[in-house]
Image (cartoon, rainbow, N blue to C red; front, side):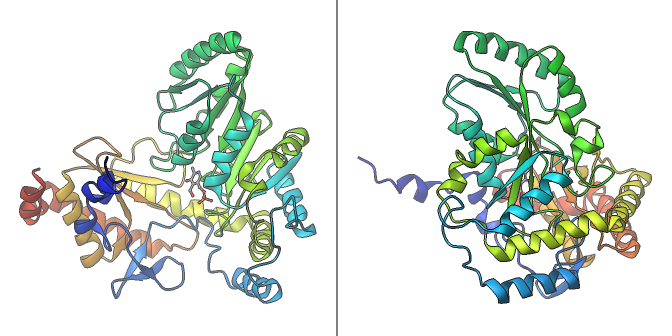
Length: 419
Ligand SMILES: Cc1ncc(COP(=O)(O)O)c(C=O)c1O
């Protein structure tokens, strides 16, 4: 018999195997200083394009003051216990009411973490006779929620209405056999490539099929829609989203999350969401902090306006310079380049060390071999100067990528990796 850890000693997994070359630099980098448009990386100032602080709230003076006062008043323990047992308060309820009103739903319920909450909500919504239909490029928390499901599931091609239609047809046939219902799960905004889920077209399929729609709007909440209520508001179909989810980890610049739906659905979920029933309640500091942030989302439209001024300046500037931004329809700004993994590593080093630009990099197997995706997240705290500097840097690195500089620089790494 083998020891359980044998496989771990042999294989660190698809990402872990790059740890020796990547750790501390490409993965687990340490960004230091207050969260803002410019932070420090390995002792040098960099323009940060990798943080989802869309509205620039993370380090706003008034937010920091409320966070600090809440920490002083409540510490980090209060309240103790799960919501159902001893962790319920007026302020949890108030935040839920305000969130529900903001996203135009009857009720909402707080989640300690978006990831766990998504997993648990999917688990609570479906039984073994029900069918899940979901996007092949869904976020890991959706995939994990689906993994818990004991019944049938169908994946559709990414954001492809024809494929959604076909899979809803298959799911309908299956549901007729099992006697269950259908849950369709989409993201509001796909965080890697920035496309909006085709929610308007998906809800139109409700005429043809009987299903419920669950939307993970992590990137849409606060950034899209006239009031910032997200992708459903942007596409004019918020009332057709049966269960709406958003995290506090992006526009709200905090920790925690919520789901919103009709009162009866929330009443059911609060008694059946295992991630909340068997875990300590969201701590008060975070609840008070979320109330402040939500108030700012509601009353300071200039934050979203500044965000979009920056998004447009960055995306238009990149497009004008001939960069391929794929199909983004949101703040998420992917820049696609052609090159190998070793070239990508040399390019990112050049960006960080010679141009002071810090952005995330995505390569195979997340995207097809031979492509490099540099992912930029503009926020309200960036300046037009940051954008101009970045545009100049991007032109410079593209020049070096095409003239073979990075290929030469990375030849040794490429040989070691067998590329
Ligand atoms: C689409 C999506 N869903 C869910 C989550 C998880 O949220 P949290 O960070 O609150 O766990 C994330 C990442 O934050 C996300 O990008």
